[in-house]
Image (tube, rainbow, N blue to C red; front, side, top):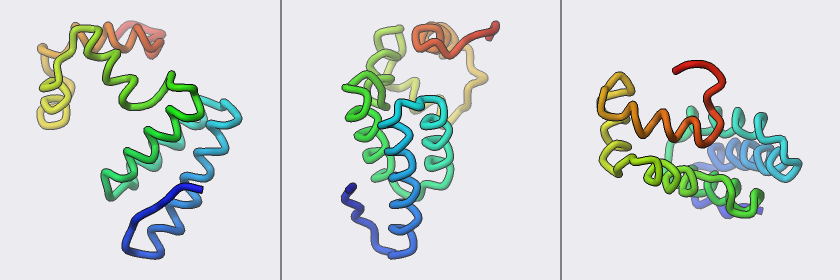
Amino acid sequence: MIDFNFNEREDILDLEFAFSDLQDLLRAEVWKAADQKTYRILMESKTKKNLQVINRLWQQTSDGHFGFRVQQQIYFECGGKPEDLINIRSKGFAQDWYHGPWIKFAKTLGWTKTRI
């Protein structure tokens, strides 16, 4: 199972359940449900360690096709820059500077079904 290095036992138990549930979805290749579970874990997350665990789970179960690092590389290939990721977090998405690379990135990943 996954090695959790957290201080509080309650957090460990909650995350063990969440991550094992995510791991089951990923192994079954139920990508949409796994994506939704990932989102819920991230919204409840209190540590960067969770990002590392989630990234590793996605990469391992998808043979390196999915994960945060994979998406980051695709974003850069679409013309995005590392500072964009910081700006999105601090300034939000309603900025002209990100639209070109972000839209190309979303289309590359198949995230767009309607007009952005």
